[in-house]
Amino acid sequence: MVNYLEEDVMVDSDALDAYASFANYGIVSSISDGIITIIGLSDVCYGEMIEIIADLEFISGMVLNIEEDKISAILFSSDINVKPGLEVFKTDVLMSVPVGDSLLGRIVDPLGVPLDSDTLLFSKEKRFMDSMAPSIISRKSVNTPLETGLKVIDSMVPIGHGQRELIIGDTKTGKTSIAIDAIINQKGTDTLCIYVAIGQKRSSVARIAKILEEKDCLNFTVIVAATASDSAALQYVAPYCGCAMGEHFMHKGLRVLIIYDDLSKHAVSYRQLSLLLRRPPGREGYPGDVFYLHSRLLERAANLQTDGSLTALPIIETIQGDVSAYIPTNVISITDGQIFLETELFSKGVRPAVSPGLSVSRVGSAAQSKTIKKMAGNLKLELAQFREVEGFTKLGLTLDDATKQLIDRGSRLTNVLVQGRFFPIFVFKQILVLFFALTGFFDNIKVNLVKDFEFEFFFFLGKTFFFLVFSKMLKKKLPLDVINYLSFYFTSKFYTYQVNLQLILI
Image 1 (cartoon, rainbow, N blue to C red):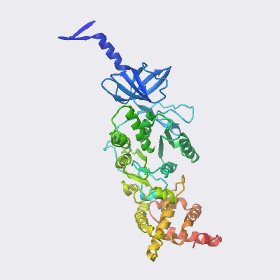
Image 2 (image 1 turned 30 degrees about the vertical axis):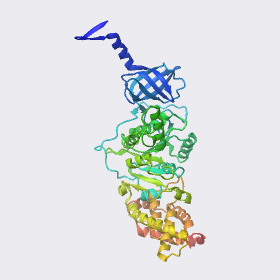
Image 3 (image 1 turned 90 degrees about the vertical axis):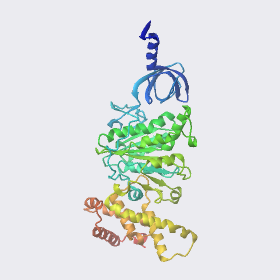
Image 4 (image 1 turned 180 degrees about the vertical axis):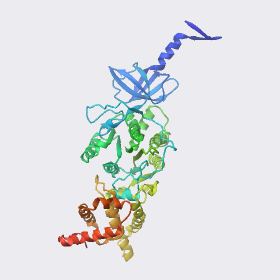
């Protein structure tokens, strides 16, 4: 049958029917390492979900390459049953993930499939994996502190709701511990947390889930896990899916903290997919659009006018402290500051091993309580002076009294900032400890016993009748008379009960 649409132009209607049907489905022409090449699907979109029926099983995937004569897509599950000649159907839906309250307290894969039990998620709501970042007009400045419970961070590298703060350092320097401490410290606040594990061992994810459960923090946390045993495709979509889950709560006016652990492995998974898709490699073997890979993820963190916020803590692993490599420099330029962890400090026993000199928050003290803001400047200055003269002690030189005092004070300050894993402390306690350290109260206490004094003092303070009122007051101002009285009374109590002060006071 022939139709005459225009003069001198003939179109075969059978060819039109064949083209129309080929627009909605295609045929697998080849498959390799989780990447399928498809003939057909002429009407498909970039990022659209596709489905293959193989041995009565639906296998989902996503379109990542659209070329003139073929389509390339990634598969999210095992490709062992996928063979050339199978039919591929388009879904007319861009890559989406389930969102909602039913995710809280669960461990899921990037597609929202539960990994912690056989109990299915009952979530009717879905959100696009790759949604646009909030516009400038819809944002407001970052001015509310997100307290991590770590003295060295809350005092010198403050984080605010809606900020993007990079945690960077070599392997095994405590990057994940800082992120977990930040989650634990949100207990009792209005902040929800999402932890995205990319390329980690399943045992590591299980250990983190157990810690959060023991601390009673799993009920307000979502763990999105794309482990090392999962495909590169799942590791690639994991941070975007986790971000979509967080954006759902953000647009409802809630505060969300999301941790990407870590984006170095995310870049590696993207490199693997890109090379299999025959995309051209660039600097250091990475495709040229790897900057866009992370920028379009981290730009979605925001503090909205509608009171919702999404705070991002991406983690990047360096090799021998090289922050000038391709991926670290990319993420440093995207984020609003970095918390740099030094291997040398870690090996000395300074935990968390945050470098005061190289760590910075570009939001500044806008996201910090008034009281701790006053002390942060002196703390940075004294630590910087201590770092300068610390090297002289190793040479065995005779030091003058001023230098000795500087070294003693710096040693105590460094010791005060040391903190155990998974035990964040409240800001009012941080304020008191820093006040004692900076005003010289700890100068008469042995360095190795400062922690004991600190613990006993807070135990004593917790039993006082005005404890709650005093803790709230400290965030706004420093009542010097009350603090001096408490410290004097606490010390005299030791004499009264004949506690062995020789262990604590010199």
